[in-house]
Length: 157
Image 1 (cartoon, rainbow, N blue to C red):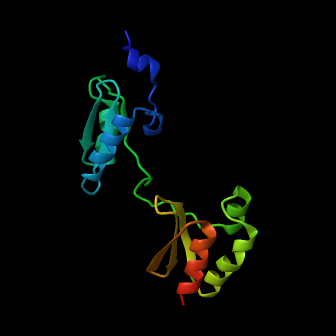
Image 2 (image 1 turned 120 degrees about the vertical axis):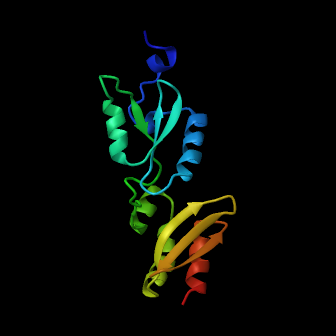
Image 3 (image 1 turned 180 degrees about the vertical axis):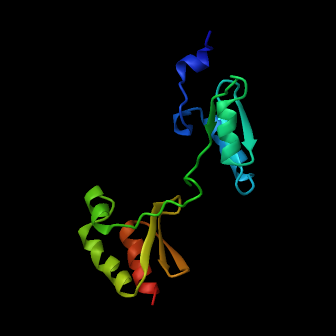
């Protein structure tokens, strides 16, 4: 007979886990992992386990003598140890309403100076713009997106 938790929550992947406490505990444990180690969560037992490599996790999922456990691999923003890189697209940001057409002059000015917009985030300080040029990066913060872009275009060479 299935328990209430297993019946109500069908965990197929780490994204299916909705409990914030479990997610937070998983992220803390994942930060302490060594190279090639894999963290997995068993919803059936409510516990985490560290495996020395992905092969060991696969073996545990198959089980021995018919005793397989349903381990869910704990994943974060990194997928298979590769950083997710997406180029910032000004036109898409305008379509989504994040920026206005009038901000394009600052964006083009940065491109002319060979700086690329890497990130544009909203933080508690305001709008934070991260620009990169080769291995160098700089951050600028403004009260609104236009201020952050204007400041960046003015300060970089």
